[in-house]
Image (cartoon, rainbow, N blue to C red):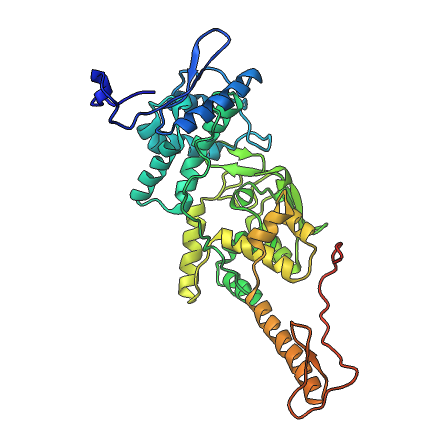
Length: 415
């Protein structure tokens, strides 16, 4: 227990302050391991009880004098050498490493870099979040900037340097994803047709095959197989490292080419005259295109045609939605798009094409019209309570017929 400096107990009189408490346990070497000061005696007692158990199980030891900056630098080095893997057991991508390093040096280090990792508490991390929000950072930016600190603290917990995760129960801003623009197939064709012939292959592969921008930059002529009608994705491209492995294990895949895509890609190959391992879409046979250049040319052409521009990632959204709308199996769509988990495809790319919304409305109209006709003929309807309602002007039937609904089959039965 610790009293305030102005407390009367300092002069031997009765305490007139609000004392603070902390628990402690003795390690095997006889040295004390202490908790942080708290205003609650019960909290200090609870910490000691948990610490005694953790000490017996070998999960508690004295906090290493490692600062957040030292732990962050070690993390970045381990990522670069491949010693530190992500939670999926894969090496971190070069771009991810650069993003983490920038987030640590620009945001985490100035506020928390001098602090010992073992001394961090939830309020410290929450303070970092509030400072980023005060600086005008968007919700997604706050989440991304916090990711490297989460990894540092997760490693500290795995190494028994922390008992409580300071990133638990944080008040984080909600991310509202507005990138949901899905164009109808006719508009996709119009957008591609409005482009110069030299630019059409890039956007056709994004709209009709769903390739990522890095995969398009690394695509070779040999990867576009016209005989089998497949686009083989084998690699990605990093701005600094050059050719790299695909984004995930599922990144290596084969995507079928629809007829229009095959026609555009064949015309592009004839126009460039490239072959073999040369880049299919590169600004030269060996150098990839600049994304900013492709984007600027497309925007210029679409503006001239009076069309609203969209991004390559939005075109990828469209590709997944077209595959789903035409009735392809969800698992197949997930494989074509390059997702490891089909749930990612369902949640992220399963948008509804506007034409399908109209079709859904037409089906609902037809459903109600059919049953309205049945009601006019005297057929009984059953409401949600199970009671039968008779349309005005009709008599109740002795054998009422209820409207049945055929829902999706499940493996459960109500009992």
